[in-house]
Amino acid sequence: MKRLGALEAGGTKMICAIGDETGKIGERISLPTLAPEETVPPMIDFFRDKGIEALGIACFGPVDPDPASKTYGRILKTPKLPWRDYDIVSAFREALNVPVGFDTDVNGSLLGEITFGASKGIRNAVYYTIGTGIGAGIMSEGNLLHGMQHAEAGHILMRPVAGDGFKGCCPSHGNCLEGMAAGPAIEQRWGKSGKELADQTEVWELESDYLAQAMLTTIVMLSPEVIILGGGVMAQEQLFPMVREKTLKLLNGYLDTPQLRDIDHYIVPASLNGDQGICGCLKLAADAL
Ligand code: ZN
Image 1 (cartoon, rainbow, N blue to C red):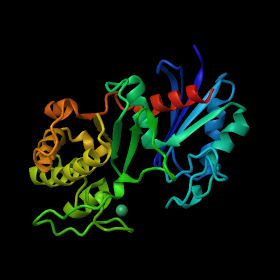
Image 2 (cartoon, rainbow, N blue to C red):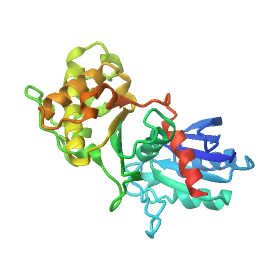
Image 3 (tube, rainbow, N blue to C red):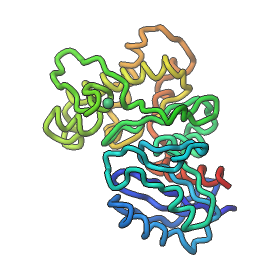
């Protein structure tokens, strides 16, 4: 068994863990995401002397995940200014002297689900995280999609739902998916956080209208065999049946596949009890060896 390090680098917290290539997780710590000079040294201290053979990092973005690029391993134009242009891969590789695997946070979560979770072995899959922001990890024919940088599926445009006066809060696009359906959009539209609105049916009706539009775009564009929905907003489990039903309604019979006929197993929650990101990091580490 290999001893591997995992770093799920999120915009609000960093989770560091030790595990192995079977997805078994041992010791872990969680730290708030402050500036690199405050947050990185204690993480390096955690991993040092643990005897890890490789480290996997799944990081909030935008990032440069292209090993052939001059800026590989950096966090790019993030609104979190202290982290802008920070070379997170070099920081850990140089301090720990082990190979480092690196990808986006959402690709990491997708990799965890595909390697160790309920979607194990599926080769065409999309993982959305719907929380403070919205992002998607995409796997096509068994490969994580990067393209020119990585997908930014949180920014697909939405058709406003009749009666919804909210203009959207994405600073770049207004009414994109993130601007209409991420946690901050819910809070700005209704004046309360999603958690406080759990029993307000109209909130989740509208939320599922937008998520279903994203599902339609995803299905017709990428033809995934499964779509996994994670993130804080999806803790509202009542969303799942609503999103499934509205997705089929939007598809309007245009596609008929075995997966869509069994939609309860097609649009699914994450299955690893919140550890999909860490599990994905372990896979990134194993692959880096
Ligand atoms: Zn946007």
